[in-house]
Image (cartoon, rainbow, N blue to C red; front, side):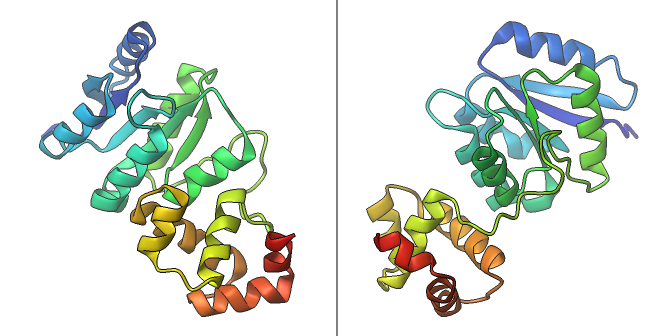
Length: 207
């Protein structure tokens, strides 16, 4: 029985993807089972391919890597490990990726050994933190989008109304709400609003 780690690759730069594929295929414990240049094509095929790990570029045409990650995690949760490659290592981007549930957020300047290590570590259930950060992002302050969501919650808006108001999917609203609850150490919408007022977050939202 083949015990190699089954990897999917998504990148809209063919030469970059082919180079990574060739390097990963040289590893005895890995096999690139398919490559994609379109996120929607990956989503159509992922169930039949059943990968262990998906390595995805965050900047893609038609659908961002963040949106793709949300869709994959919604359906497969921890069954498929996600590794994100990005040209932007901003704290807010990194934080968003980890809140979605990715196992590693790597710069597109990462070396092949770093990507290979991230794949292996993800299979052990470990999450890798960018070198510029010492711990997984758990900032006391909410991101701008999370602040917008908290404001809508305080206005007693439903998830559907928040999604429409902020031009995002209801699933994305749910992810932001989960992040808000985790950062504020609460379990409910009411608790989030109460803690928001207590910490002065909502007052600042209205400034």
